[in-house]
Every structure is written in structure tokens, then in C-alpha cells.
Amino acid sequence: MCEGNRKRITYDSVHNPRYNDKRNVGWYQNMEYMKYWPGARFMYVFKGGDLNSAAHLLAESMKEPFQMFPFASVAVQQSVRDEFIERVRCRFRQLKPHVVLHPNFERSADILRNGDKKYIVADCKDAPPFASPILVPNVTHLHFGSGASGVVTVHSFRTFREAANMFLNESPPFEVVHVFDEKVTSVYSIAKRIRCVEFFVNCSDVCLLPILPHFAMKKPRTVIFNNYHFETLKLGDHWRIIVFPISNNISHPCCCAQFGNCTCYLTGGDCCE
Image (tube, rainbow, N blue to C red; front, side, top):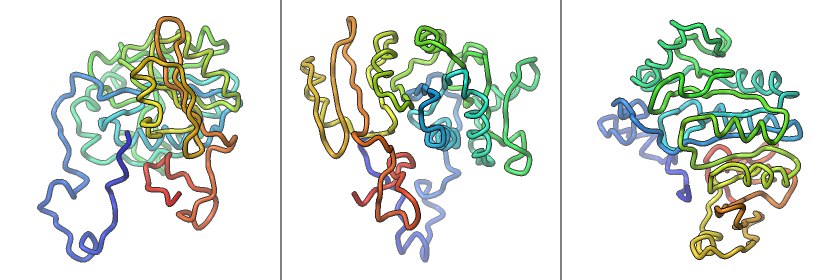
């Protein structure tokens, strides 16, 4: 997760495009059936969290659900569940052919079309139903069998115990948990109840190199680096890594954005800061 964004626009990419180079064309993808999850992520959204940033991060991930570290499930606090789902849905856009025709996605879509479970797709003006990202409420990934499903399951919770159960009842082997909440302390209540190593609060894809040596030595430590708080600690019988921005605002001024604030770390772009 520490690599920079390689999708740079160069002179040759505009004036001398190489269409025969499979690395440079977006539609070339591995279309084989995926038996395993490529590093699944779980998201928690609390009523005090930045719903727009969380929705943006989730919707962007759903454009390429078979690349590394896709979001598989999201748990939303009950009071903002419907609002959050709508904010994600309004960001849905038509999926590319390599996603729609992927055997895992086709399997999940067939299960939903032929079953009785409700699911959420984009508005018709944004994407046709057969080529839309898919949210599936109140269902776990066990419903879709083994391997990456290409869809995101949605759960709601009222207490920390319920929030932990949403994670424990899901089947993907989650490697990363994202928490969106104005109260940073909520991540500690979550982390001690579930088994996962990496926890990102109000941020995404932050390089963990500043804290990894301390985590490897199993030494509790806090590191402040590049406006982020990195922490490794033992909760119960397991060690965790927790990261969050020092500022309460998860976006910050950046010369990369002509208007508004930078969201480079949310979109995977290279930030001038």
C-alpha cells in the first residue's frame, strides 16, 4: 500500500499511445475465476463520521472490485444507514466490461437476480442495472459462496457489540478495517473486539513504514509522522496498528486541487504535500 500512483499522464500516452501494450489498456484484466479474496477491507461508518468521504472511498473501490484490497462489507450506524446508502448510490457509475463480465461478478449477479434478496444498484440515468455496482443489505458473503463476490454487503448496528458481530459474521478474511467517526476513541472499542491488524481512522492507504519496525518487535509505540498519528499496541492477545490524521479534517489544502480540498490519499493520487 506504500506505492505511489503509477497512472501518470505523459506526453507519449497522449500523442503516441501504445494500444498493443496490455499494461496500458484499462480493459485488459485477469478474467479467471477468483477462489480467494485479494485482501478484503471492512468499513465502519458512525453517525459522527464524514459520510461524504466514506461514501466516496467506498464507491471508488467498487469500480474495481477484483483489484487488491477491495471493500467487501460496510457496517453503518443505524441512524444514518439510509442516508449513507443513498450517498454511495448517487456516486455509482457504469462498470467497465472487464468487471461486468468477470465470472465472480456474473455469479453474484445471477444469484441476486434469481433469488429473493433485495439489493441496490445505480439510478438508471447513471448506469444500467446489469452494469452497476451492487450493495446488498442484510446479507453476508456466505450467500455468494467462496471467493471474491464483486459486491459489497451492508449491515447496520446500534452498539459496539453489534458492530463487532457484523464483522465476525462475515466470511472474507479481512486484512484492513476503516473507521469513519469524529470520535477517534471508537476505533479502540472496535479493535479490541475483532481480530484484524490494520485500522485506519478517517483516512485510507497511508504508508505504514513509520510504525512497522515497532509492530514487528511487538513494542507499544506512538509515532507522529507527516501529520498522521501511528500507533501499535496490544489489545487482548493481539497486536494492532492504528492510524489517523492529527487534524480533525480528513482533507487538507493542497496545490493539486484548484478548487476545494485535496483528497489525494482517498483517490490514490500523488499529493504535492
